[in-house]
Image 1: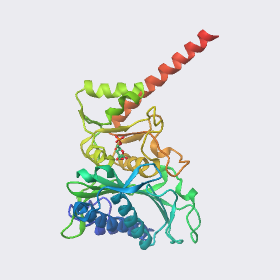
Image 2 (image 1 turned 180 degrees about the vertical axis):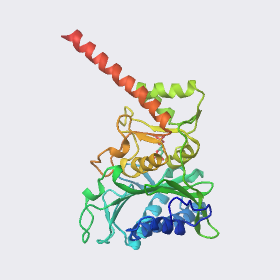
Image 3 (image 1 turned 90 degrees about the vertical axis):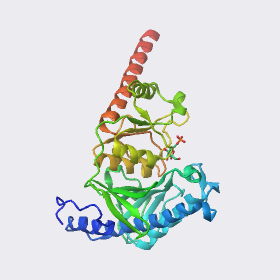
Image 4 (image 1 turned 45 degrees about the vertical axis):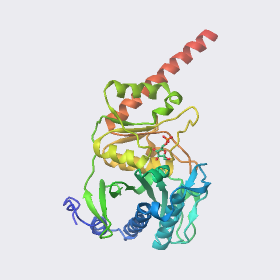
Length: 347
Ligand code: P6P
């Protein structure tokens, strides 16, 4: 299928994946199968989320994850579902999960791929019926097939991603992903058990009037971030912050906007994780024409040192991200000037 012939709205995810695979003559179908495995797990998780209140699977699980965060029962359930689907699918040798301290070996030693995932992000919102999401990135292993994947296989920069996506469990359930040739969105029809193409070739507006940030932490933000937030308010932008990254990101992707989880005095590296939140959404936003930075560096070029490392995230419409970075650069320049003047005075 010629990539130039856009596939019609209503194309099933399976057919879409197959047609797009035809665009890659050397594709062997493993990545296609991996995407199907993720879609399958998301259908199961979707069903459990929708019935959580009836099945007694809301609320805390009673343990903390490696991040020191209270695991919700559905965090654990979603983690199990995605690991099982990827293990049974056979294409993935190793998984990084927000819910697991160490890398997970699937036993598929011939598997070509690594998956980094947050099985259920925003889970504190589950009990109050607010949209939540699954976030995933796919990398090609760098080690030889035939043995378990290594930590080095897992610690690759975002530019090495071969696919990235999320599932948003919201007023409708959608899967949005990219393999590096644009971004496409699929809406789930539960009565048929299928995802259907509903948002072909998603591009994000260059500018918007929505800013997403937890302004309750404003006193711990840098002066540059505080100045940018005041700039948004002076320009009568709308503050929209759901407390669920996938939901805030998805709205801003479609309408234009910026999401900021910056460095704070308490958490200098911010809260969000590089490998399975920031890199994933950075790949998607760049493919849709937007930008993603930690305030100084392009997120996708950051070299990960640890599986669960955190990084500040400023992501969204390109002109809005540029403006936020401008305020941060002005602050850095002012600090250098003050630093130099102080040094001069102390000579
Ligand atoms: P805060 C959820 O825990 C999450 O990782 C993102 O989904 C969300 O945007 C953010 O943290 C909310 O964090 O500190 O504003 O409650």
